[in-house]
Amino acid sequence: MKKVSILDVVEKSGVSLVTVSRVLNNSPTVREHNRQKVLQAMKDLGYTPSSAARSLARGSTGLIGITLQTLGDTVFDGIIHAVNESLEEKGYFLALSIVSPRQMDNNSQNYFLFQEDRVDGIILLSTLAEKDYVLELKSKKIPFVIIDNHIEDTKAVTINVDNYIGGYEATRHLLDLGHTKIAHISGPDFFLSARERRKGFEQAMKEAGIAPLVISKAEFEIRDGFNTVKTWLHNGLRPTAVFAGEDGLALGAMDAFRDEGFRIPDDVSVVGFDDQYFAQSINPRLTTVRQPMEQLGREAVRILLGLIDGSAKRSKSVCLKPELLIRESTAVCKEKD
Image 1 (cartoon, rainbow, N blue to C red):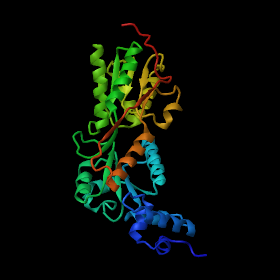
Image 2 (tube, helix red, strand yellow):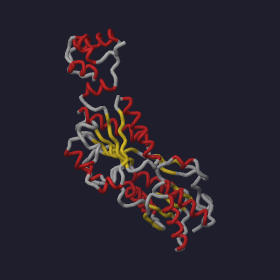
Image 3 (cartoon, helix red, strand yellow):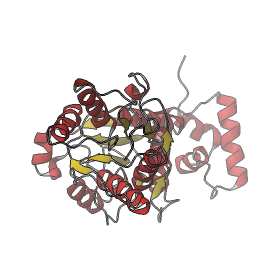
Image 4 (spheres, rainbow, N blue to C red):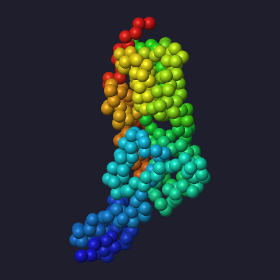
């Protein structure tokens, strides 16, 4: 039995392909009697639009690209799943691209997704080549949004978490538990998120009238958290609480303290950031600041599709509030000043 196509609907309804396409996309510009012709033809033929037909109706590829540097981050994994589900609901497919260091070293003009006829839009997920990618996408007039941007004064549409508030509330939690010897392990300055989390930490400490015991910068790696704490202790710095700017850093810090005979949270309280999947599986479970992964992904899709169909030409950037999750890695300070 021959499968019914969009062209069969055109023939049956007696209207143009353009009109059928507009009906499929619920365009308000179609005259009502023509809309009814198309709907009746679809009913008579038992026609259900395929993804290819919807792409034809849009005059598009039906593909949205997303670029990222690694799949080793469970926050990114959660965002990608949310993006994929949202796109499926709208009849789009997701094209995933992991950008290697070699690709970033080369001129982004050769970047295969950044071609007008390959995708309808792009989501840049915490890209390390933000400046070059933004310039190229704008020059090619490809709609795009950025999740977790790093350039502070970017003119692009961004979807971020309020990292400043997250850092502030994490530190405020430790202060409320009576801690005064509080240290911070910050991520690299390249990342706007790391800078904002550190600012939130510093503001909370300033308001409390307490100087940070120490602020150290490290890569977002478990081993860096471990080595940072080992260096502190070797140099005679003994915090009663640590705010780590990322869960991997927090995990490494906890391991280092335990390795030196400290108990968590009895001797040292530790707070992380992100709520990676392992955060509630380790012992003790990690107090952390959760990024709203699902909401980040869905907001990115909503805004990007608005840019594509022209309904959101002046889309505003979005900043979502994180959530402090209090678990077992933090406790009331027992040390007396």
